[in-house]
Length: 120
Image 1 (cartoon, rainbow, N blue to C red):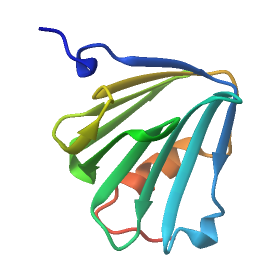
Image 2: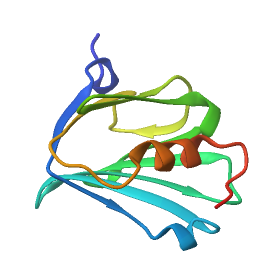
Image 3: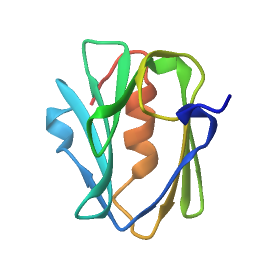
Image 4: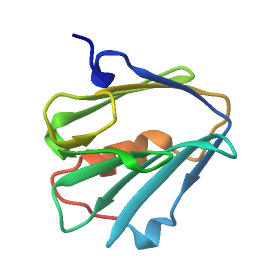
């Protein structure tokens, strides 16, 4: 039987928003926006080990330990794979984002999300 997590979530990203780096001591947040009603938000509190991923609203979300989330950034594509979700609700464990825009150093943001301890 096929479940919602069997198929990857695929989205075109036309805008990327990152919270200011001086706030990373508390929270890292990045948003990938396709249009007015489609987005992926990825957040991590600096004092927590979990990454929270949300698609469009809080009904579609998952949480995983930062070691269990893999970000693969190649050319204009970001693939997010969650190997062992802690909690999951209406979300696949693989997300493929086509990046039609750029933002500063995206790799730096992704590295900070995955870091054992968050430092700026």
